[in-house]
Length: 156
Image (cartoon, rainbow, N blue to C red; front, side, top):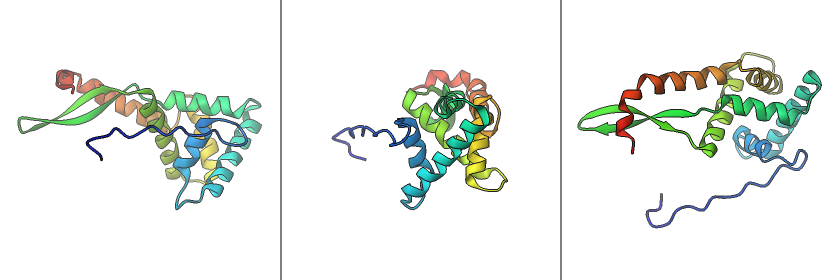
């Protein structure tokens, strides 16, 4: 990490079919070993399944799922005088969206099921209804921040 210059924020172009930056962000997080075509195919198939299941716009459902899984606070370790404290911090919008996407995809991968498309479809549908593992992870983070509220004075 450079000490002199702050890294420039790269603007992500929207995906070709839905024209959504969120879909592109999700694709980049889903991609493994540089196989972006495969990641796009999986995302588009899952979104098509979401649209068929709910009879609504799949992008709206996915945005709702990401919004529901986005945390408001998180804890970070801070070392003070030989002790390590879990200090609760507010989460910015970019970081919150990144965490939500990461939790959605990790809970999709940990689901037992047939294939990634089915698991991703089910995880998006569950998160849009405030259920599922990604929502449970967000609640755990919120509980941890609530439990360590006394150490908020050590914010940096």
